[in-house]
Length: 113
Length: 113
Image 1: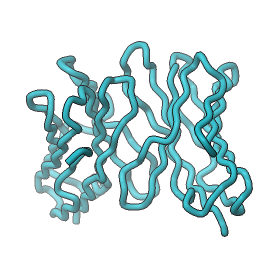
Image 2 (image 1 turned 60 degrees about the vertical axis):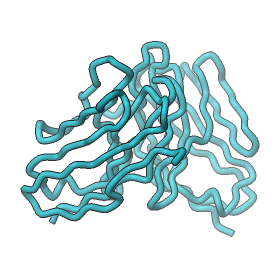
Image 3 (image 1 turned 90 degrees about the horizontal axis):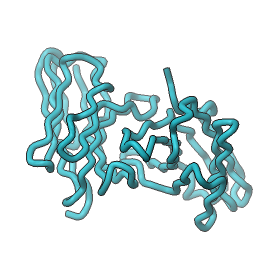
């Protein structure tokens, strides 16, 4: 497809389990972001990949969170030992350049029971 | 420390009237500002942007005003339509250094028919 694709769209997991969320950005986009939106909250920055530069991980809330971007394209956000407070919609966005308009996916809704 | 603030969580406006959404920022290095619109269960979509070299940018019913000395920007929608009902996020970045885009907490706009 032409847009940013995220999977799964919904994930329900038990506390303590690991989850992986996938983002397939728009082809050719060099910048990729992960944000999350908790219930009633705004968009919280998590991590930012720009080309071959080292990612900006300054928004990751704990060391249980990690992300990688393979081959400058697909990205995976991994949450280890999930906690109930990790429940949120995780949004991925990509941009042709670091300074351009961000195109968002529809998000992955994570529910930790 | 929230670098981008939207102090009004919600706003109600009559159809046909003007909607004014406000945003304040603290980082004087920000030089590029964007507004995004988000419907429930969808990713945010880009609405309009403004560079710090301008103080106004207009696109149809949407106009963004930037007051750099006050570190304040606003989005005007006129005339407001029921389809404009959504959450509006203000965002900012330091474009010249390819830095990440930071979002505000959002303002939920309801346009009443």
